[in-house]
Amino acid sequence: MMDFSHIINAFLNFGLIGVMFIALAEKFTPIFPSYVMFMLLGMAVSDGLTLVMTILATATGSLAGSIIWYGIGRALGGPLVEDAVARFGKYVFFSTQTYQRLANAYRRNHFWVTLIGQTIPVVRIYLALPAGVFCIQPMTFTVAAGIGVLLWNGPFLTLGYLLRTSSQDPFHVGLWVPVALLCTEIAVVLGCRLYRTIAWR
Image (tube, rainbow, N blue to C red; front, top):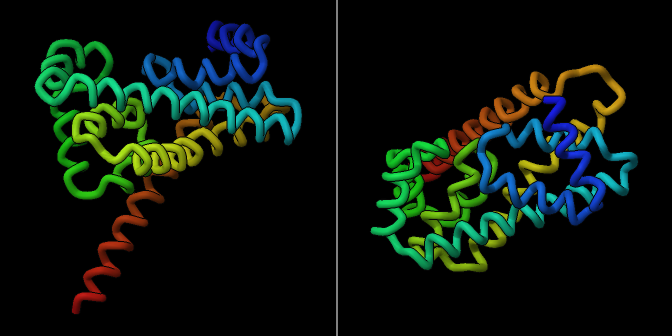
């Protein structure tokens, strides 16, 4: 944790450009939990205005990473992407089964799958790959991914900012935030299904 803090501090020397690059790199290196990284970034923020700028900078970097994945998927196409996932996916926590689930999800709803997927660990990194394969409308993808990125980055950065003067461990505190987000998403999905069931009767 301490070594990673030093890496973050090194990039912070480049200001918002460094922050943007950290968020971009996170989309290609799923080794360190992103929620911990964003909380550490939030702890390095000095005031409210800088927090807002940091949220926007990380959102720009994260969205750029998603767009790159989208472009890779669109350029390579389904067969090549599936072959690459089968060969190398295991090294980056991305199995063939996960790819197929994401691909199947995109057959139902492009906008909401993209948005919600950006708030699910690991899925948020590779979700754009099948989106590119299926040639999801670029504007739909960009808007949905942008909203999802803000919903993921913002709370962790803010939480880190609020905890910057405390002795709380960002790793342990951060574990509960994705759990809360996941429970909220499940509740929303179940609520929508219940509403549709009642409406159709």
